[in-house]
Image 1 (cartoon, one colour):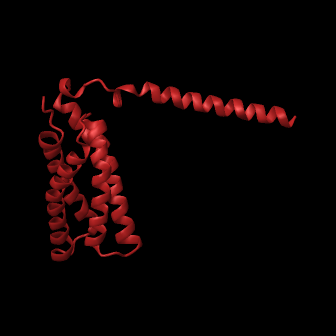
Image 2 (cartoon, one colour):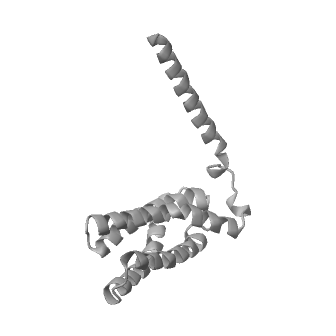
Image 3 (cartoon, helix red, strand yellow):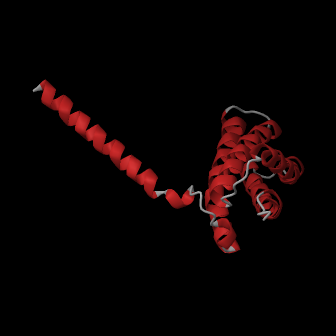
Length: 167
């Protein structure tokens, strides 16, 4: 009886592993080595940027919320940490999924990516400073305004400078 239960559990686990493997194999176009980026419309990339970019935004907002609201950190410190983590997630998502960029210079691109993000970080920080410190506005609402400005700037800089096809 005990051996039968162990055998059923093993078969169930094997089926789960097989199903997951099949799903990963079916996801080929996302991580494919074929070059789809050149033949894609800007609209498709923009939609992917917005949808997948939500992951970076969730990391940014989640980190900001936890540090600012839960741990009562200074809003600028919370924003710096949130920004750094969001940018790191954003780089890899943009490089691999959004722009499907392939090169052997990932570190160089990462430095350029951070460089452009510093500009939009300063815009977002100024928005937070004006909203929270000068206007006594709600921190979350001010953060939303800053993020909208950053998202638009980040897309333009990523599309035309960081992940531009250089063929």
